[in-house]
Amino acid sequence: MSRRTPTPRPSSPLSGLARVLAVLVCVVLGLLLLVGLGDAASIQGLRGLFGSRQATIGLVAGHWQNDSGAVCPDGLQEVEITLDVTRRVASLLRRQGYEVQVLPEYASQLDGFRAEAFLAIHADSCVELSGFKIARLTQAEEPTQGALLVETLERAYAEATGLQPHPDTITDDMRQYHALHRIAPETPGAIIEIGFLGGDRYLLTAEPERVAVGIANGLMAFLRQQTPTPAGD
Image (cartoon, rainbow, N blue to C red; front, side, top):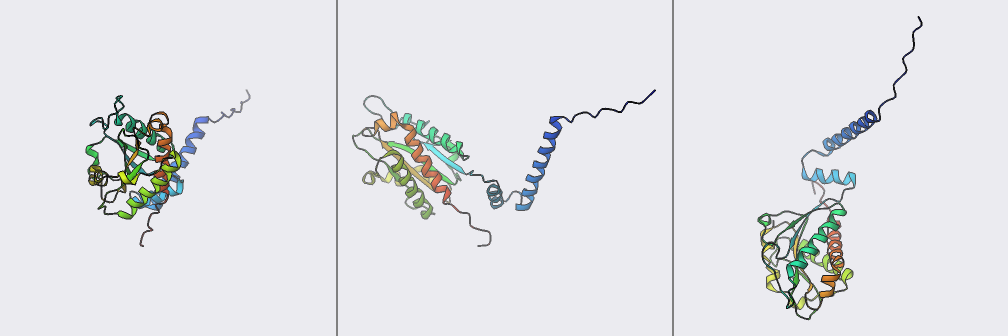
């Protein structure tokens, strides 16, 4: 009887995929060992190798889970606007690869909160004025970064919304905003009042995406300007 030569079995697509995944795991592990596992600066370096734009951003939706904020004669509440806009901002940033945490007004997580940038989003009263305003903590330990955050946000927000800054109505309550006292001193933070519920009502209620784009663009522009200090400098 003649022997039949066994017919080779075609390799499974899954086995090929497993080999590719194994190679990728080895590459990642090698990179981790190269830059130093667990070190914050090393993790930033690893992100740079992959082109990642991840950064932690903290957003407070003004008055959320606390009270209504300003209330207009027809019942429009500030918190309705701030929560909607804050969620839109978070969504835009996450789509660009950023890590975002949305917090209520008096969240316990605010104590010592660390982030690449922090912003509280509020709206102004129902009076017939128009404009926005941004402020930082007056006695901030890192005034340079806080000032840069305010400047960058102002430019991007004005461009996206067409509104102009309204610095004459910036109050001490904004400059001494409670959350800015609670976050970690090294976290650049600010508070924005995105417009007046009276004079800017159409923008805030009918075009909230423009509002969100202005804030998101400002935050991303600020983060792009942050360059890690090389080790040993």
